[in-house]
Length: 337
Image (cartoon, rainbow, N blue to C red; front, top):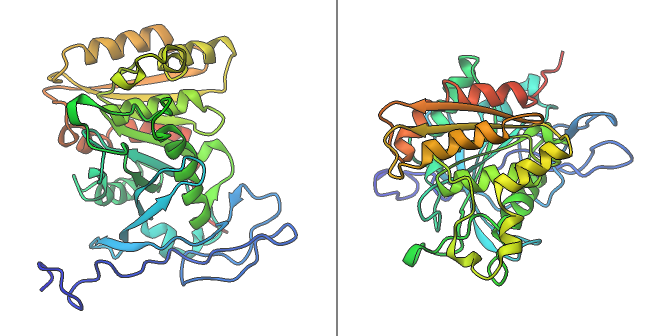
């Protein structure tokens, strides 16, 4: 019955609540709750914590892990981008069940897929990513990130079409979707951190490019990224005729600008296999690091011997290096005394 996902033998599709949605009132965070667990009655006025702003999203369970946590799914209508798409989210057990973190803000990682990135995102069910995140936290390697896993593209990549995670003129505003609407969803429903020190991206291939570009384009909002096997320049054919806008979404241009303006500091971690399908990927990443890894642009590279251009290569290697490195830069939840 579970295999065939027939209720009551499965909880797939059941409503998921991540705690109270608190509305700020006179410098505190008092408000009505919409569920149990994970919420806090108040946050100090000078707290680094941003309490959930609401409104509560209609999360439905997509997968239940062995530790009882849920990966849930919501269809988000982006108010700023105008794009409507799926987002999967996961909160670690420390967020939902640990009393000492009940008033703590948690860091957010926006995890982007490679491939079509349309209709689904392989991080929510593939490669034991959530299970490994929980294990790596217990081993003291990573911060307990909240995960947001949105679709990357508004349609299939027919005939080599993709959107570079950007606002390409005349196209759906996927840059705004990823850097505005998805973070707004997380702020509405979770205890997060007010500053950019609690926000990061991670992605593979074109998702790696999108995350890299997002951090360099919005260093005031995001502090770090893990880019797995990424392109380092925009190359969607949809940019044709829009060279000015294309340059504004070029990590090389953005990194140079950040160096020239002396910050703020960003942390770019790369993972690249030695058997990438594009033989230029590793040399291009190394050249990017050599050219732009200076001043406020901090870089880190993990070369995976025998690694191919796929999530199965990148996912198991995240905990030994890339996630550890950015976790040192990202602010984590502070336990109450």
